[in-house]
Image (cartoon, rainbow, N blue to C red; front, top):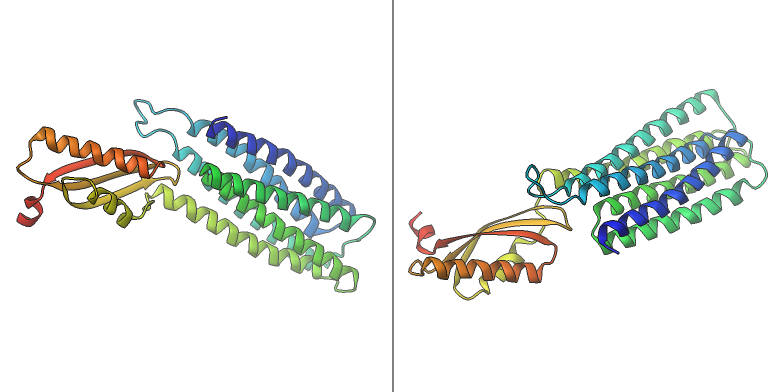
Length: 290
């Protein structure tokens, strides 16, 4: 199974689990009149929606390069990763606004029946989804899966906070449910900020690899006397590199061209995540003259 198909398979599995978890929490939240549980349920629903958005994004990003997109469509995955971050901020807004309303109205949840049993069960599912997505994201070098795992991690925080608030409400702290919702809302906002920052770094072509390591590799190629103007961009899984390599100015064009090919072959061999390398060969005395 290829990388794209494996990522899509992970998203389908996590979508089904998140759909089950969100349904259980929303029904429970309405039945016991708990703003914390209800907010938790809608947060899980957004987890499922982000899985669907990711499925579409990964499908689009896997399209091969074409005339209008010579560098491929990889950044579609990054755009949908940014969408996950926006989903998190939307969730944060809903949690905070509903918690404030509940606080002003002095709502008190009715903790009854298997409430905690249901929440513990959904918490275990969330922990599994988080670990599963995170491990697969690292293995497949998918920033979307890693970001989505972060989204699920925020759901874990929400559920733990919800359980604590219900426990406090049960023993007499009547506004604990609403206050917990506010606290969790701010925690979710932090997760959203981290996801958005990761996506923006990629979209604005932040450096993806260690320049010193690349220069060391290039300088190990016979005939190279210098290396500068190293630039990288793209995603962790698909990096584009260009650099300037200095060679003896007395070499023929064919010899200089051969050195450029050896640089490209070595760099791609040692760094498999590099998708394309552009080597600008120039005589070593050019920099001295400048």
